[in-house]
Image 1 (tube, rainbow, N blue to C red):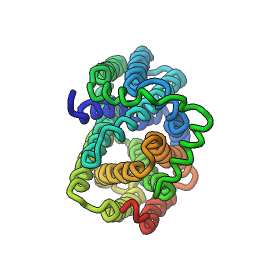
Image 2 (image 1 turned 45 degrees about the horizontal axis):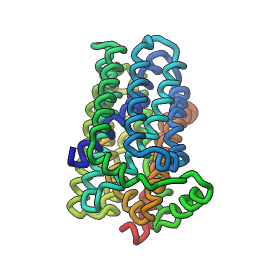
Image 3 (image 1 turned 60 degrees about the vertical axis):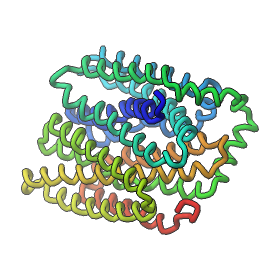
Image 4 (image 1 turned 180 degrees about the horizontal axis):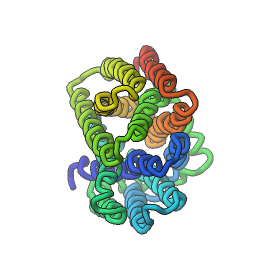
Length: 405
């Protein structure tokens, strides 16, 4: 495998499986069993390992080679999916929750190693296409494990679905083991020692925050998806309450919408390769996203009056939102890597891990409380708050540092 894009694409693909299971399959199953929106939202606490991955990035960088971490973590995910396959569909949530938590731990460790490899092996000209492949592959993995699994559940059954996911992980293990690019990258890493010493950790932290534009980027990735996450996590569940079947939701929200999200990620990569300004592109996209949220809120306020037309329009807004989210995510990850490139090379892995951890923090925390907001404030008030939060990144972009233009 001489091209760096093939192993990176395969490994980012399977990295999206746990997110798809958590965000696409699990909420619909729990809602079908009668759990409240608040309880379903609180299951996002299982994303906690993604918030902590900056803490163990020195461990991943300094103990084994990155190829070893990728093989071990991906192999562990294969075993977890095999264990999920033996759980009955009507089993209590507890054993599935523990397995999902372990999967998130392993997947976040895999992400630290894989991001470090990406920053190391891709040159400046490959960065735009590399980020596009990263986002597209990850989202395709989440489609397969989320909407795809939900759609196939009635056809193949619980056990077959998770065995198929195990096979996907097994193929990724073989890809990581045989990749010549990963073997060469591991050779360049042989001299990294004593990463966990106290002086080294202090040096890593100070080096990360000395990189130009880091503080601005941390704030940006924390807020840029707040309103969007509240909307995307709640609209499918509100449609489920109005009689839309889990299979229909799995098709429209798990396959069609995320398919458009993948298309948006690819479009974002094309636009950035043509030299489009990241700043101007993001500003335009944020304006479109706010307009879509306003229209969506108006539709939700009339959901009980003309359900057939309103439901169809809401499903279309989900498709549009996911397309915009795809373009925004590719542009944002490119902005993050531009910021990481300005850090010293020996702290770049930790720098990017910090940015990606904060990015997950903004999405997960608000997704967890969005159900509480809808239950306590009502639909209209909650979505008005989502609109207001979606305006924050627009204001923050006005203060973009010159180093990131």
